[in-house]
Amino acid sequence: MRNMKKTIPALLLALGLALSMTACGNKESETVTPDNSTTPEAVETQPTQEATGTEETTSRDDTGVYPNATGLTEVAMGVTEDICTFKVPLNYVLAGGYYDENNEEHTIQGLNSATTTVEEALAAGSFSTGNHLAFFTMTSLDADQTMITTGMYTPDIMSWDDFKAYYTDAKEIGDESVPGLLYHVEAISGQCVAVAVKVSDDVTL
Image 1 (cartoon, helix red, strand yellow):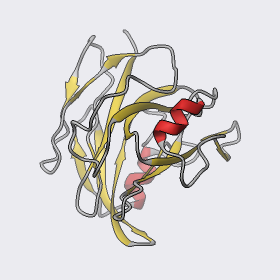
Image 2 (cartoon, helix red, strand yellow; image 1 turned 120 degrees about the horizontal axis):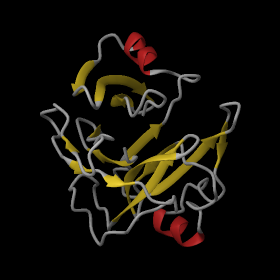
Image 3 (tube, helix red, strand yellow; image 1 turned 45 degrees about the vertical axis):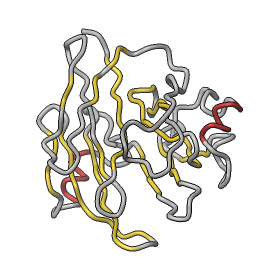
Image 4 (cartoon, one colour; image 1 turned 180 degrees about the vertical axis):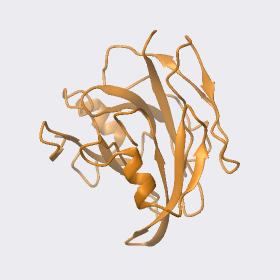
C-alpha cells in the first residue's frame, strides 16, 4: 500500500468557512467527495513526496473560495510528519507553529508576523524550517479580513472521539473514509462555523 498525501482546501460557508477533504486510500489515485451539500468539491489525492513545505504555486484562485486571492500554493501540514497539504492564498498573512515532543506549541520562525504574506514567507524559506506546520491562522489583508484558523490534534491533545463527545450538537458530514463534524464555536467576532475532520486514527484536523 502506498501512502497518500491528502489535499485539504478551505471553502467558504456561512460567515466564511467550510472544508472539503480527500482521503488516503489503498488505490494509486482516489477521489472522495464529502456528503456536504453546501460545499461539494472533490480533490484528487497525490502520492506523498519528500516534504518541502510547499507545492507548486498556481497563478490564480480557481477554487473561488478565497476573497481577492491573487494565487494559491499548497503548504504541508502534520504533527510528527507531513500528512496533508492545505491550499492557501499567496497574498494572505499566515501565522503558524508546531508541537514539540511534549505537545507544547511553538511558533515557526518567519510565520509569526501580522503583515508577512504567504508569498513573502515562501521567498524567505519560512515553510522549510524542518518543523511540521501543525496549526495556523490565516487572514486576508483586505477590509473584510477573512480569517481561517486550523489545527491538527493528536489523541494526547484531543481525539476524534473527544470532538464527538464535546460537540454533541454537531452535524455529521463526509463519509466513512473521511468522517467530519460541522458545528459552531464562539469567537471574538461572534459565532463561527467550524469543521472537524478525522484525517487518521492519530490525527484530527
